[in-house]
Length: 139
Image (tube, rainbow, N blue to C red; front, side, top):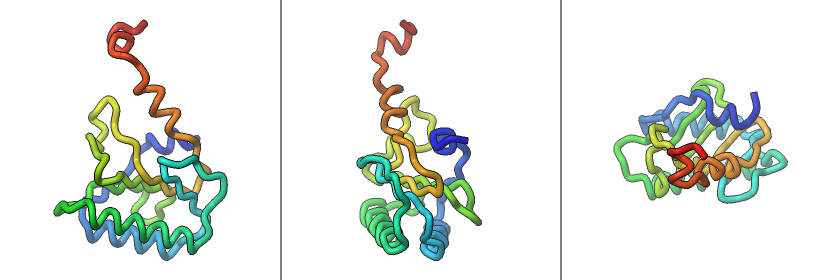
């Protein structure tokens, strides 16, 4: 399965803050061989070293705590609670309809994966680039 298929695959939404903290602790305890992809940047070509991974995860956690003042988390998703190897984290200020019911769901801000990322911006922009007429009349 390629990176885009994994990204679009089935994920478990982390709704409770305690579960989010537990996931971050699990990630911190296994900081090796992770690609850190800030989707506002170019996709990384190499894995992050352990210190970089732990520091970036700490920075992400600070953003989530300071800017997502909800009773529930709902912006962190993982492919596996026990043995995660792909995590999607949405920025609290760019949520739109994270649940995916929107035709153009927001792009996750951070993607943590064990597999080398592909540029997802191209994938998402190609769908957003369709104009109103071509979208409905299929020119």
